[in-house]
Every structure is written in C-alpha cells, then in structure tokens.
Length: 148
Image (cartoon, rainbow, N blue to C red; front, side, top):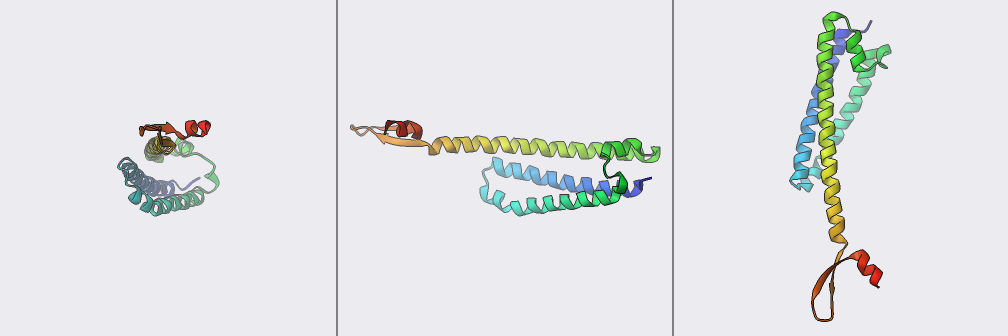
C-alpha cells in the first residue's frame, strides 16, 4: 500500500512548483506581448532552472510512488482509501488546471511569435525598386528575382 501521506506532501510541493512555473509563463507572455526581447532573452536561464526542477520532481515522483509510479495521478486518487481520496482528487484537479493554463499560455505565445516571424519574413522580402523616372515601388523579392 502506498504511503498516501508522503504522496500528498509530494504533490503539494509539485503543485507549488508548477504554480511558480505558471507565474513565470505569464511573465514570459507579457514580455513577448511587450516586445521586450532583452528581458525575454535574460529570462531563459530562469526557464531552464524551472525545467531542471521539473525533471528533478519527476525523479522524486518515481521514488515516492515506488512500484505505483506507472499509475496516473487520477488512478492513484481513485484507488486511495476514503480518508485520502478527497485531498488527492483536489490535488489532481489543481495540478491538471495549472498544467492546462500553462499549455494555453505556451500555445498563445507560439501563435504570437509565429505571426511576428511571418511579418518579419514578408518585410525582409520586400525591396524598393526604382523605375527610370525616379519613382519608388515596393516589390517582393521573389518578383524581383523572377524579373532578372
């Protein structure tokens, strides 16, 4: 039988870590929205540390759950004795909600960054061309290459 008190304590720490990570993800999205490239670049070390801490928690989870480490958190909560089931179910919901919000933020950031890259690619592919009368015309690089 798993040590449910140890599991509950572990998941309290684990959830706290993910909430800290979520807080970071919110600040990262703010930096992306605000075009704060320098701050975003500087935050990479913080993100890297959070990822390393997540990996350490995964190792600890395997140790805490022991032979039950192949079970999902939902299965652990479902199979827990009555006195632990409510707390574990609440923790599972809390963790799932936090991870889901992190995924939403990362998806939003990905969309923003990819759209900005598309705009940059379009802009860098535009050329100013001149006709013989001194008029400037903006052309796409692929059009210009096809004419030459």
